[in-house]
Amino acid sequence: MSEGAEALVTPPFLVAAVGASAGGLEAFSRLVGTLPASAPLALVLVQHLARDQESLLPELLARRTQLTVVEASDNLPIEIGHAYIIPPAAHITVTDGHLRVPRTRNSTR
Image (cartoon, rainbow, N blue to C red; front, side, top):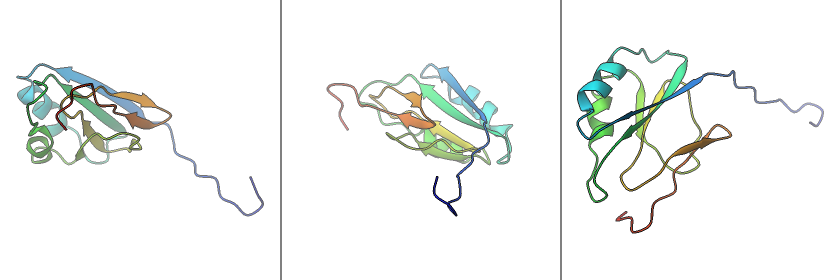
């Protein structure tokens, strides 16, 4: 590191992945509804959806939590106090503090 340069230091935090069937809205709602925005974690929420089905989960959960709720996208950095929702027709992994969300073949989006 060059002289005078500041290192970006991010404290470690929990990243919890939770999966549910298509009927998992109530369970996800209860989970995120209990967490304050200051919770020292990030959530990755995976719901089984038909390949061509739009997901309203980000909008529905955002109404029930203090966490920041966003649809996951490729190479998005994971942040504390966020809930990331898998989009339809995608796989999701975490690599080096970022979400990896490659679309599956025949994706409609």
